[in-house]
Length: 250
Image 1 (tube, rainbow, N blue to C red):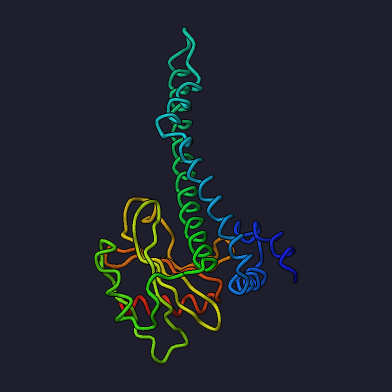
Image 2: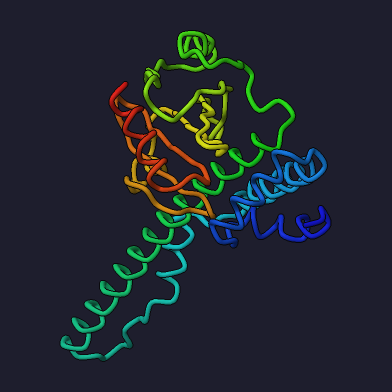
């Protein structure tokens, strides 16, 4: 397939609207084609800029509360006490429903924002001419490189006897918090492992276990105050196997 045809599908790829098979084929093409990779990286950067700009106008919980109060039905003078009680109960139900929906919407938006940013980081890394800052298959070289660059330490698994190989690592940022991004490879598939401090509700509320997010298989969990993400177009079984190695090492 010509590069022009691949470029027509880049937005679908970045928005997670391709099948796993198509995403895997396009991911392989991006690793081999510098022109398409540069185009993908440019679109990822634009997407992140738009996302950051949109957050500036996100309504606050206080604004939602004021709107709910302003549209609440006020009892008319002369209403009997039964109607007053019924109106009060209806208002309580309305406020509770608004609060619940607002909470659920915030949780869903936070989940989508985190996974979208991780997918962008993963794609941008694979599209970059220098995907890692420390290039080594030796965990005893990669792990010490992060000392002084991120505010925590972590353990890496021994890969001997497994199908996985370590490529290297780099410092990554999730919502302005620094962390580690490690790149592993299995059967020509690159997998990003992100490690960040567990903080706030945005990360603490994320589901555990393997899920499919934006055309990538993802597994996430917390351990020792750290939040781990394993992201890639490899199979769910491979994501789960690498996650087990990381869990055992931690």
